[in-house]
Length: 342
Image 1 (cartoon, rainbow, N blue to C red):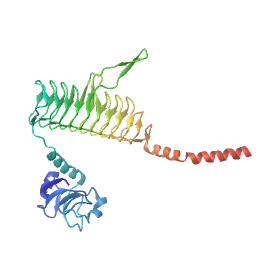
Image 2 (image 1 turned 90 degrees about the vertical axis):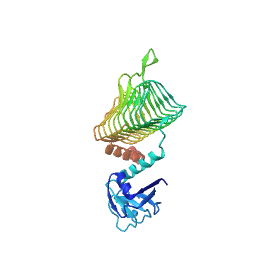
Image 3 (image 1 turned 30 degrees about the vertical axis):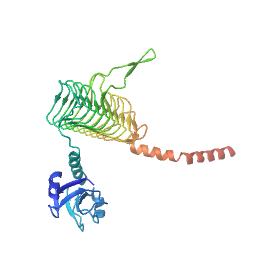
Image 4 (image 1 turned 180 degrees about the vertical axis):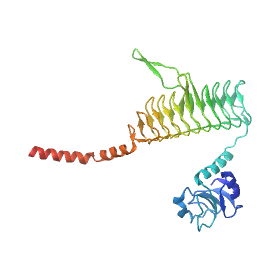
């Protein structure tokens, strides 16, 4: 189990407040799931649905949304236990992954690159001319940062990340292993029956607090910028094509594929394996369900399912009708025979 070694009062400070029921000096030695936590562990109750089950937990301390009567351990009452638990996990992850600052002898950093204070550049990493790395950032082994590209402070690029030229990213960017940012978009013109490549020479602009999953790809624009707004999270194996404009706090789940020149409004959610055709707009706060494909614009706040994507309740009715097709076909045959016999 992950080690914590913080008192309950220190945990309260870490998560930003809360009310302690029990001993503030109780030492939370580790973290554990509710069902397997022991008397020295801290666990959490996600929401009120689990309060009754949590009363019998063996955990030494719990993060809870409200006090639990009859629980034998200590409690820290917080508004959002899952969010508080995430802060604790972030602290553990940061400690576990901490890297000594400095440039590894096997790294290649161009003399014209700008490296901030407290930066770590791992073995095999390449930082090209005029690239910039913000203070406290970490580039793991074999990262490539291209010409004139810039990442902000306290960013983390995991092994084998490729960021090509003219990519500008804000602070606290996290890019997981194998992702490629800045590849050329898929652009071809037809001439005399042959495919003529349309070079993509634009850039990518990424806001603060963006996270990009493993093996995801974000393509540069043709002549302007592909943009990813502040706080947006892009899942593993997702693809954002050239000229896309993705807003703030958008959730793009694993294996989503956005075609060229798609606009995604703030706080929209695209569930796993969803996709779009070119030039579609996904409205602010809209939801595109898993495996759905949007061939038309999705209005703000709409919840769409299916291929092609339709309003959720309509798609449910369509699927229910499809399930009855064999029965309807049999009934049609019976009616046809009766007509023929009459």
